[in-house]
Image (tube, rainbow, N blue to C red; front, side, top):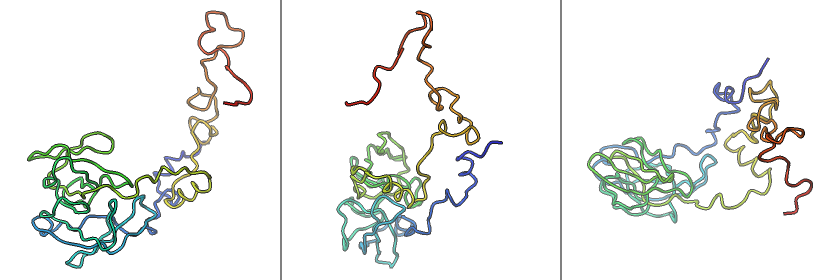
Amino acid sequence: MGKRIISQHRGRGGPRYKAPSHNYLGKITHRTYDSKEKSEIMKGKIVDIVDCVGHSAPIAMVEFEDGERTFTIACDRMYVGQEISSGFKSDAEKGNTLPLKNIPEGTIIYNIEGHPGDLGKYVKTAGGSARVDNKSDKRVLVRMPSKKNKAFHPDCRATIGIVAGAGRVDKPILKAGKKHYMMKAKNKLYPKTSAGAMNATDHPFGSGRGGPTFGGKSSSIAPKNSPPGRRVGMLRAKKSGRKNN
């Protein structure tokens, strides 16, 4: 009898596939979407910049003048003691958070709300940024990191700047053990076994009896004693043995 495949185990929701959110600092959000946020300005100060195993970017702890403290994504060149602001009347300066309708076209932004008041959903990865492309009364077009334009409600908030931590993936991972601990921090399944490399009992693609996509041998090579009309394409390997180049 066959076993459950990995996607079925993951759907069940066992501890092997759950995020270790008890190790995270907390929710990474904009300031609370209240009346002051909608019509006024709330000034704050960067109290600390810390790391979180659940996020690739550095996290900034912000304390606002009304006493509220939030964790937010740090922007490039943000520092402890820096004064920022959040709200409708905020200036379009690096580190400030304000509605998209008040941000000039061509401005680089990150941590964009999908709906007004959802506290930030898009462009939160280290080194990520988007750009305000076009504005109208009903929507604001934003150029996303995928190079596609996405429409947002004009009241959706975003932070000015580029997410800190750019170049994180430039350094190569030279040891499998390093990758192991990186994946373990977020409880990711690693290493991943391809379906075609599994046994027949573990996956429908297993056993190696399929084509090249499913772990079997390539079917494009003609048999050794086939007639001339069938001997087309790649007949044999061009090289064999140790490769020096």
